[in-house]
Picture 1: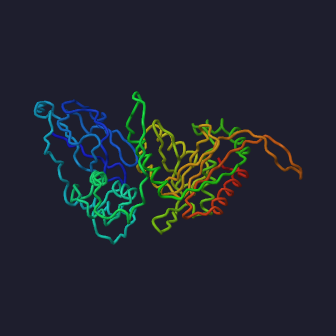
Picture 2: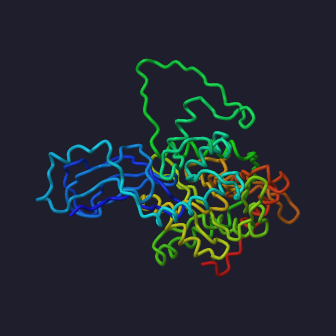
Length: 429
């Protein structure tokens, strides 16, 4: 019996994936649940297990090919006696994936059309069906919807694929006067390198990070302000409670949940920082989903802790530990990496004092936290200035000046400082 291996659906908004690497080749035997290939999406890379034991008889997509969800990418013969390896050692060049039923295609097209909201077009505009990867690239390159409509698509139902748009951009033959729609590109520079310089191509994760960060800088008017906060009381509380907390919960009590808890309180008071901009529309989100920047081998991921405004400190502690562990074990899924409404970047864990993090689109704000260090600080006590040793931390708030002014950013940071320095520890655990 022949089993079709299809491009899996990796999340609600994921409509296609990129083949990164095949772990098996035609003619190889494979066990059920053994890794067959690795795919990449706009959100995460994932290893895909084999749905059945057998022999690989056909591979229908090459590395770097972008394939729609549901399309056949390989076939496995489960009855090894019937496998003719000589015949199956080559894939016919004209082999096409099996067409899905018309109903499935229509449902998928409706989903893609719903996701066009990320592209700055009217919902009533008629034109080509666009995947999220195409709309993202079009936004980055300043391609208008009317210009996209003139590009000949090679996908199903003549849909424009990311490859179609990349080929169009590399051809240099724009169909519409680009000067009226696009800002001038930065001039390319010519570099000379030593003949023995080592070169290596960006891997899929670094490429995604590069695209996302460049897109954010091109989109938001970044402004950063800083403030110093006295974390002495919180540090002392963590030291007092860490042993009993670990014995009850099985993981360490850290400073980060206190910051997330404080952020959620202030975001409730200042919902403009818990918003997104879509053209000239301001979208205020009804829930507070905190994106957490997590360092992993080779890059960075930003999973989200949802509904932080509905959780107590202990709930945030548990959710933070679970999502960070899941991310570092590469067990994260694309749905965990989207939906954030504000982001926290704790570069202090690496010893950095202060930083200016880039806003995580489509958020309008990101808070950076530096390392906590003992410092001599002048405090007022009984109307006298006294020098004391305190646990100090620098906060840096990055915000989108298109929506938030300096006064609003400063007030936001001041409110966080006030909560952290006067934290109410009563019955929090």
